[in-house]
Amino acid sequence: MKQKELNNYVTTQRENRVGFTNRQYQRAKRAQALYHIMGAPTLQNYKALLRMNIIKNCPVTTKDVDNAEKIFGPDISTLKGRTT
Image 1 (tube, rainbow, N blue to C red):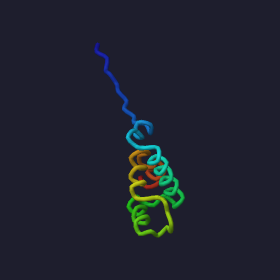
Image 2 (cartoon, rainbow, N blue to C red):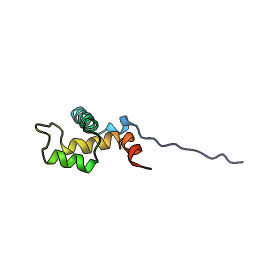
Image 3 (cartoon, rainbow, N blue to C red):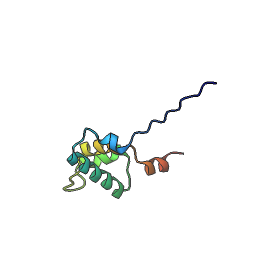
Image 4 (cartoon, rainbow, N blue to C red):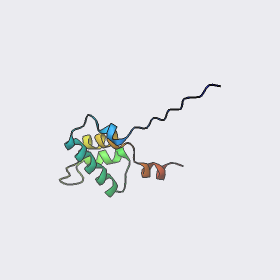
């Protein structure tokens, strides 16, 4: 009888953070915090708000949002709330 080899591939935040500087990581955390403060809009709307400079003197850029998405992955609570 052969045994099946089971592999479980899970990427961690530490693995996703490789290749980013500490400053980029801190800015990504700030972008994620602002995302939740704003009530978790869609990423397209969030980036549009940042590009249009609706939030005056906002230190978060769309690049920070992209980095946050790469490091932290999609927001679980938002996914749970928007899917059926």
